Image (cartoon, rainbow, N blue to C red; front, side, top):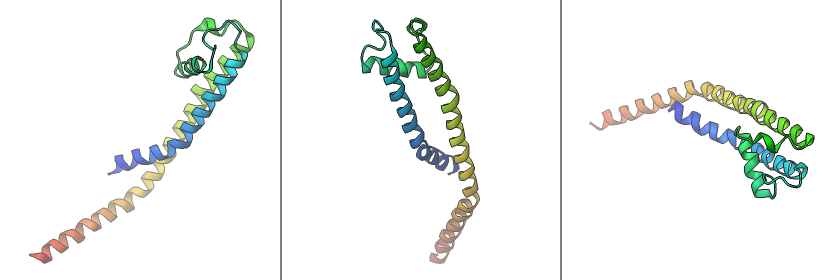
Length: 128
């Protein structure tokens, strides 16, 4: 059906997007870890920096972690704008493009399915 093919195509098209998101998250995790002040417990090791960056990508953050350093504030604004604006727009563009592509294939697919049904009905009627 149309919805199933739409979901399958969206999942196929989202693989590069998800790899881009992972790259951005890992790169910014390293960046936050490098510019974090020495006493920052949120960025003490890669694991805690990863979870803090992931939480920031989802919109959850502790404001006091980013006011200690001007560079941390810069990276905070850069990361929140990059994730919330740029990557979400890319996601919307991917889904929109996939929808248009699936919509173009809808008529030929439906006609093919109808022809298969007619052939099946014809074979069943000849068997009787």
